[in-house]
Image (cartoon, rainbow, N blue to C red; front, side, top):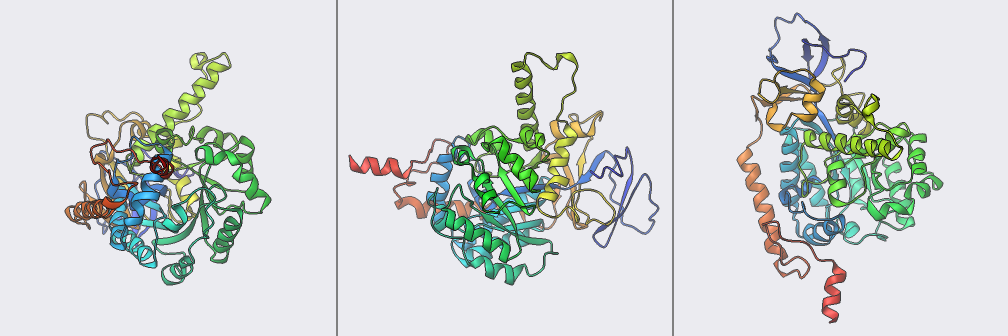
Length: 461
């Protein structure tokens, strides 16, 4: 992913003290530990720029829900029964899952922090995973249990977290502020939250353009308020107007596309192509494993296929097609860049990670190519996007430390992680049994949350 180096058909990567010090066709380092990468693709670790990691114990419960069902079921419902130890379990399980699939850097968009103890649990879960993480402090149910136009400002506990855990921006874990923005708060609260981020000198990640919420021209309002800048990542962007995307580009902002969730929940068409049209190369995000898979391979496939479909439809509408021999504008290599170096840029970490570049920290993954589905290897980028899956991720290094070898995580007890996830799920189910809104939760794919308005209407009759 370093264009100045290019792709090597065969080669060596030399790592010393957690950093890449050489990338070449052959490196003489007789005293080094050798990791045999024959029949593997070696590439930088993937970067997930937006994941609500605490929801990992609710995997796939929302696979048949809309965005509004998700808001009712998770934020108005299940989230408020989380204990700090549940937040820990969700973050540890979810980040370990990401790491196992080759995602070495994860931005945890952490918006179930009801108390300082919940924030501590979230951070501990990220730390114990061994991954590189960005803890994006996103407050809790008080701020997210009622949207839009929530009048409660961002939690002041973000100040403590910054001072206690993230006084330096150079660690394996760094901090950002996950702000609700004008779609989900009052204008006064949005101003307060951005002022807090700037006071704490933190990057911002914010949801914009998700479904009907995004048609209120949030970017135009933010521009008028002087809130657009190059330290902000705009998540989704699906229903933003074209001129709003241009405003983001003009102010140096980055974007995060969550194509799997966006087409599944009804956020709108993923904005990948429209972002490219204004000069923004987006990053990619899993978003919520409550709905979709937690790995980058499936996400890259969806993002690429949807955008190619949109491009083909636009050509057809214009009375032409690809039959004339025009090149496809979005390539598999583009998707790999979105999943690596562009993700690093969106996290403010592109000077440290995102490419196999001498001087950068050694976040490296090895993907097997010796299987029937990957052999013969004729197009590595195409094979990674269209054929690969988490089971082919053989080896993972984070800052030069091997955390996965021979297809197994070497530093975590997977049975314990599964048990923690099940214990959290079962605790929340028991605690919610008396909650009228969610007392009918089923674990067989049949449960669809009811809105608070629906419940109030039933009581009225």
